[in-house]
Length: 417
Ligand code: HEM
Image (cartoon, rainbow, N blue to C red; front, side, top):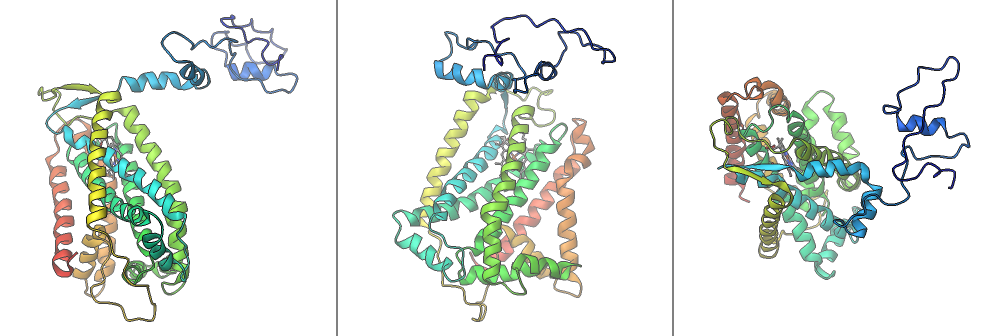
């Protein structure tokens, strides 16, 4: 310890560089020498030395910070310039500012999912024999189990709704333009993962509706080349069975949470580092009314949105509970009107419309190509990247939105809720 800290005196000047050994590289000037290299060079006892000299007294202990704050600052001092940078982050205020709250609302519903999901996991049993019964047990026997389950189900729907609102609002404000391309792409990945959460979670109660909807949903890739293998991988066999439940469960609680954390970390880091964009031309034409600090002003307003969102969530969970239905029975005939969750209705309707020879494959190709182009929009909209208005992309966004809304409505009109 003592030899490790022999240089650890506050304010001590950097040591003079040692004379170079014959044949060694040119010595580096003291001011530019890398601390890590210095530590290794003098680490002759084989004992790890921290790369940076640490003063004996805490240099962050001043009258302005609490002792706990100073304790953390001493340890996380590398982060301090980042925190200083974030403190300066500002959000532009203009007539479209309200759309900036939907990313935060999505995040809020996601956090609710993590908490309620963990609680449900304490009692849920992911087997063909026990899954349905464990849901009934949670709903009927566990104190407030019904509320946790209803909140989880409603928050999933609200989160996906918020994602769509957030995605289209950032699209129409062209927030994806340079240098925010990766914000859009990480967001797109987040949307795919969230849809994956919805799809895999739907089967977990192991009720009749979910069972047959999963059968229809996992059937879709079959018409594509190599699709049969994909269907088998998804189902864990030829048909939907207990194996499928195991797969959906592991995707829902292990794989997807892992990847969403990575994508979310990237998305939120970019949001903080690159800051919030304003729509094209707003600054030049004086439409920005001012800027407000992200910490604490914007965050406090975000919190108001979250409180309203939470109120709505609890209201929906209590007043409009989701049914558990009846236990899935693979041998029973499929009930009429099997359809997926509402956020897949547009694609579902398109597949129904393309029921001609080769139509389903064509629909899959069109949907996949459309999805890829949508993900690549920041690299296709050159005008927006040059800070010029790009009405063609606005029209494209309206067409995509109309496709989703009209097809979703058509399914609703035919099958009801
Ligand atoms: C789990 C899903 C998501 C979460 C939690 C999330 C969260 C956020 C948050 C908190 C912000 C900053 C505030 C705001 O502008 O709303 C933001 C900004 C942004 N998000 Fe997302 N987002 C998600 C999905 C998406 C999706 C699906 C897209 C688009 C495909 C997207 C694209 C963007 C863009 C481009 C910005 C920058 C906005 C600007 O600078 O004006 N995000 N996101």
